[in-house]
Image (cartoon, rainbow, N blue to C red):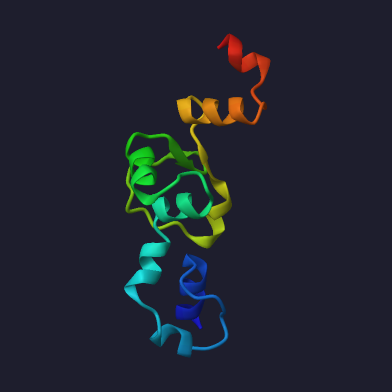
Amino acid sequence: AALLEKLYGLGLVSCRRSLAACESLSAAAFCRRRLPCLLVKLRMAQNLRHAVTFVEQGHVRVGPEVVTDPALLVPRAVEDFITWVDGSRLRQKVLDYNQERDDFDLAA
């Protein structure tokens, strides 16, 4: 039960019911939980190469922490907290494109 709970929390298995899901677990499941793969899945990057570049340059944060390691495994609990860094030029471009940029941001 503890193993299933841990794997479910990491997002590697989709259900907590059966140990049969553990034996079909592959290395690709771990790779899909890396931060750049999730950036592509969330459509924050066009492809994996751009996503790795964004992470290495410090444009992405997970929760309150800026992440510069593209090998970070993102658990299911913090997947919703992946966002751009506040001072990032990419964030400003996205806000400009969506016409959501605040006037206070223009002064800063």
